[in-house]
Amino acid sequence: MNAIETIKELTEKAKILNKQEKRIIKSFPIGKAIRQGDLYIHRVSDNHPIGEMLDIRQIAEGTSLGARHILVGDVKVYKGVKLPDYVNKLWPLGYTFDVGNEGATVTHPEHAWDCIEVKGRYVVTHQMDTLTMRRVSD
Image 1 (cartoon, rainbow, N blue to C red):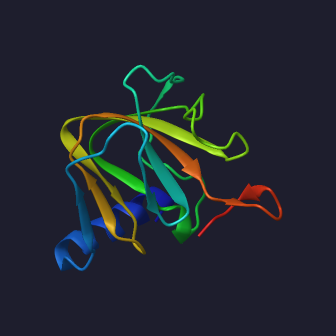
Image 2: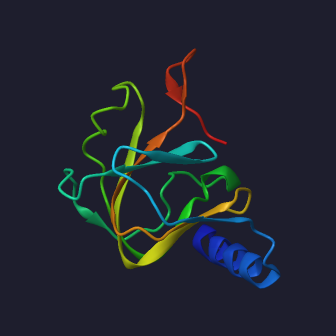
C-alpha cells in the first residue's frame, strides 16, 4: 500500500469511528491564523499571489505520520510564492490554497480537524525551530 492509499484509509477510518475532534471555523478574518500541529494556516486576501496549481491535497511535505495534513473538500492547491506581510520572513513558506463555496477540512490522524467554512485564500507556513532556523515537523 502506498502513502496516499494509507492516508485515504486512515481518513476514512477516522470518519467512520468519528473519534476526531472537529473545529468548525465559521469566521476567519484576513490576517488571522489557525494552528494544526506544526502548521499555521493564514487567511489572506483573495488576490494574494499564488504559484502554479498543483494536483495535491497533502499540505505538509513528507511521508511521516506528522506530515499527513490533508485537505478534503472544495479546494485548489497552489505553490506558495509569498508569505503574508505580517509573518516573519524567516518562517518556512508552504502551499497556498483556495477554499470554495462548499468549504474544506484539514484532516490529520493526530490532530483535531479544522473545518473551514469560509470561502477564500489561505497560506500555509510551518513552525520554525529558532535554534536551528529550520522547519519543525510534528
